[in-house]
Amino acid sequence: MDRNSVDWHGTIPALVTPFGPDGSIDEAGFRRIIEMQIADGVHGVMIGGCTGEFWALSMAERARIVDLCVETVRGRVTVIAGTGAISTADTIALTAHAKTAGADGALILPPYFVRPDDDDIVAHYRAVSDAVAMPLMLYNIPSSAVNALTPALCDRLADIANVVAIKESSGDFNNFHRTLVTVQDRLRVFCGPSSVFGVPASLMGAVGHIDCFPNVWCRPMVEMYHAVTEGRLDRARELQRQGMALTDLFVANGRNLYCATKSAMTMLGLPGGVPRLPLRPLSAAQEADLRAGLVRLGFDPVAPARAAAR
Image (cartoon, rainbow, N blue to C red):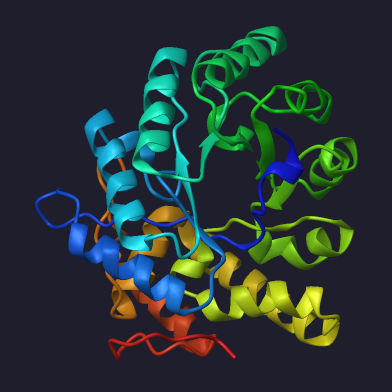
């Protein structure tokens, strides 16, 4: 397999996993989120990633959300399941379940917490590829995973049989561009922080965006992708400006991005739910500041309806 083995592209939201007050997965809310994203024109959905709080889910819950997503999507868009884990055995087990459930691919970050060297990381991905014959997407997010998939390492990983894509979420445009230049002949390269530099990433050759912000700002992010591909660059630049402002708002005043995303969804009448420990809901002051910021950006955090900055 290589980049030509799949047709993954466009806006693929990294979805939250909504939890109810008792901490259980809000399955009805999860299905509702997926349906709303599809209605807003996304090209796929990615579940069980960082935005989905995979670290707070049991192995059984991680498998369950894949089942729920595949059942809900019913083949209408691409489904990519986050299956990364510290141990290779757990990664293989989750990836095998994703394949059996009917997911189109698996997103796998390098083993986190421990510090394997590059040879270890290559062996890890090769073991998963050898065990499960399905398209695999690398996930570079060193700010959380500790271990970086450098451009040089990605060059090696791109030659593994079932690796077809990468989500580059280093947040460093220079690193993103070096990775793109190195592997785009073999891998489909997606921009992670597309709310910040999705437009230049697309102009340089990224095939799409995988980001958390479609959870609250879906149609504009879908339009941003299309504005670039259709050459409407003035509109693309304006949407990028709005995305940057939204990003700045979500992480200001000590807010955690994932908690802010869920809080904003709730303010907009969407089933964001609450985070699981060790993450806690935003404080009252953080929520008030977030609400005020949403109003400034053109959202209506009072009405329980879809909202988008225009």
